[in-house]
Image (cartoon, rainbow, N blue to C red):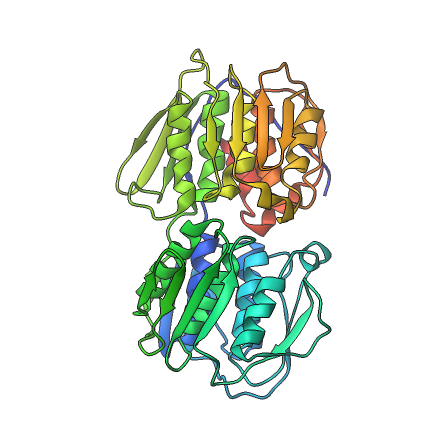
Length: 419
């Protein structure tokens, strides 16, 4: 796909419906696969990550019906099946890690693979936890993908997991704990990153009647109460950050539908960050609106985003237009996301004349005069969507690989154009 030029504009306005949360959707899909009975999930996003999960569940024999944003799944997964299956997670880290854990509760061999960038992402802590539970790893011992494993139906009831690299390892183990006879206790080692996502997992599991208890250094999952349910996936707070940031950068007003003031997603924090920077923010039980008078300057901000690291690209883009220094901390671990989001963000923003300095755990952003450039999103959907927003104020900005946004929001460019 050719590079996409971003049109500058003097203020934006619009009402936007963003995709459903892929974080919630992928957790709900795993739980629906494990729960006996029929589950219907509504407002399911159509991005690559969710499609990869639905395709994997189909290959596992569940035959989910996906139509009009709704998925109907009849569970449970046949854990006694001895067939060998290969599942393609594409570029989705969440999908690959959840499917890896799922492979530990079925008798047949399960191979999880994905695109080259995903193959390089770390998995060793999840692999080690599954081995400790009793799963058999049939592929060569190495980090990353592909991985081939088979489980057994009498996995152990306690395991230690290092959450300092990714909360996805803990979430993956929590969900399979719902079908382990006797339940599962996870002893958390290190300082878990993005701990709010563990709470999000527990919330989704609660929708399926699974009891979860979370303490400072452990998680207990009851293995006897899982039931099918109907669930509406709330609007994705990570995706909502882009149109809300458009109002902050360009000025004007943008309303996002479906992201209300009771959202449990950690990335809903973005509203408070924009308020601190000088924007007007209004929320109702269903929607969020951000406004900024183009004549009012944005203030710099210092914030720790360890619990909402997907916001780093969007906030970095906004901070480039602040009138004072900004600092983002607590996110050194995002060097191992879809791209190296620390050095990558600094490099791409600096191409546009920004003054962004990488630090061991984040970024420092100083005011500067910016100019146009061709931005390489490095196969990272969040880099593409966030840095395109720079072009709302700076002429000559182009995104070299616009198709990468299909990972989470296939319609992003048409929505941005309509603002």
